[in-house]
Image 1 (tube, helix red, strand yellow):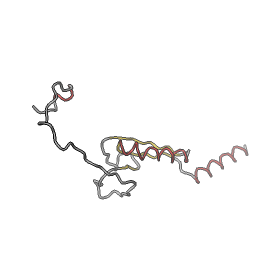
Image 2 (cartoon, one colour; image 1 turned 60 degrees about the horizontal axis):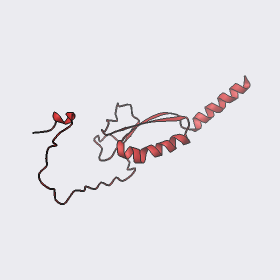
Image 3 (tube, rainbow, N blue to C red; image 1 turned 90 degrees about the horizontal axis):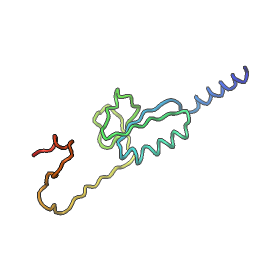
Image 4 (cartoon, one colour; image 1 turned 45 degrees about the vertical axis):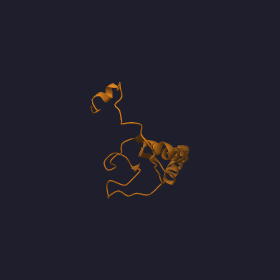
Length: 120
């Protein structure tokens, strides 16, 4: 019995000194895969009582009431009540051919999903 009490005291002390529980994180696909996921994996490995759920999506999520503890975003915040911190600069470069050969053309055989959305 005393051994179980000692084990329980050790467990309580360990939980008080370390992070534990669940953290839900949302991030964009590209930025999340390249920057967020590797860092969260390392952080979770260093905190074994912590479970991190990372969801990657092409669509931004409204953080308030969404079930996420925080979201990693690229670009300006849509809601002024949110707090932001720059984690990494994400420089974008637009590239294009100097001359486009002819007018844009509609594909000869569009996939079925395009049929309803492409203009004639």
